[in-house]
Image 1 (tube, helix red, strand yellow):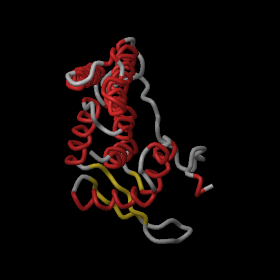
Image 2: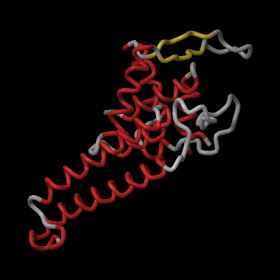
Image 3: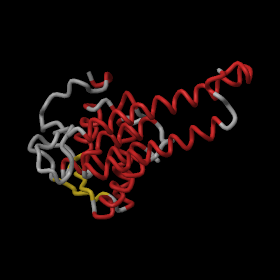
Image 4: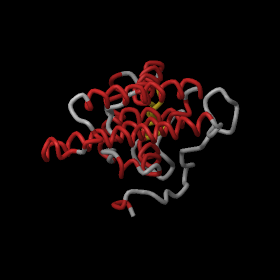
Length: 209
């Protein structure tokens, strides 16, 4: 799964309608240019491609009074909403996704009901445990990696990573169970993760400073 697809769909959906610079600014505000391959060129390319694929609808907006070419604003279509939630659910439940995909999913998890997010995260923990047990069929962590020579360090790293991922996921589940954050359908004040028009972005990519 590509993180940029989930990120762009989620960013546009949060605005309702958004032009490319707004999407780029939001993703930089979240630091996505640091923890993913979400660069300006890839964002604009993704917007155009997804409009061709029918998951976004492109609106041509009249140019501003200051002049310049018409600006294109994008809106998530019904097909795009379906794909967005499919990608989001898959990313929360998967155990082997890349860190940027999981980061994107965590950023949008509040778009789902609390109970569903908890079920998806528990599914993730079960998959992590199953994967870990498949590794320990060949490697006993208690015995240390040396029994397998330096190659044992590879399995040692895998098991350590699985344990760390499981610990983090358990912590997140506990926080959500404890009432943290406002999820879909709860009627609370939603977290605003988008910048208002004209609002300065303190986390913009360095090349734009």
